[in-house]
Length: 269
Image (tube, rainbow, N blue to C red; front, side, top):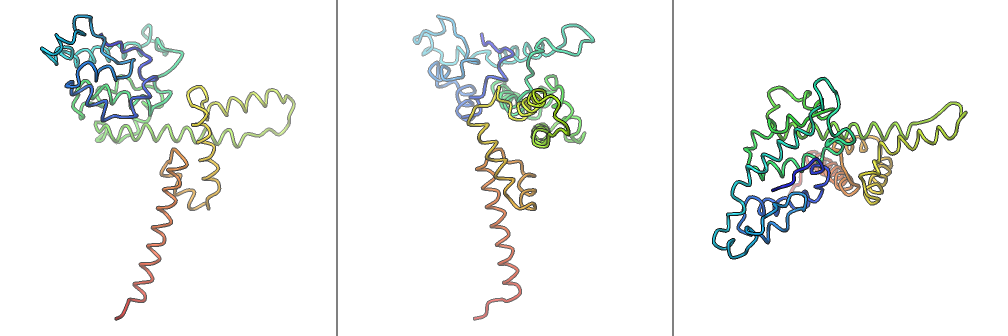
């Protein structure tokens, strides 16, 4: 039985590390139990002692995977039930302490792995994802053109763009915070701490990830305004990505100047 509990979307950060390997392990079971054992523990199929016998497995390598798609499907439906309100009319789900959309990128990566394991046709991915949409993710979906709402790539891009916009707003609120009069410095400190945590989210980001965000912020701030805007529109997530974008911008700018010069003064033999 595969234990597909609420923690799945928030705990499967390892899934995105090697999607191709994951796909081979789940969708192509020729690797047998050894391959299955390499799956993240949260989604490893739990075989019975009989199924685990290597001799029996050799007789029918696919035996442990028979009905696996149905099992994934069943567990996905169970997960969706945890998102439903306890009673009709209630606005909170059973999982009120945390939302699977706290980190949209991680949740969508987990969803894609489930979709691949279930072998859902890609054109049906949005329909399968819809029941799990809530909050800002649902708002982002509503902003997608009606004719493109069945396009998973478009929906995913809209959700991630909304998350990036939200994160930038949180950063600006922290950086632009000020008070005219300091009557209660402790309250000011608490407000700053709250705003900073909303932006950097130390509860789910590592020290290295937070450091990366701070370096990225300062790198962007050091750029000329025009170049800074050009890079920000492309939403780099790391300083390395921002550096590559700047290099591309400068290269294109140099190529444009070179082309303009050659048009004005063509080479002559």
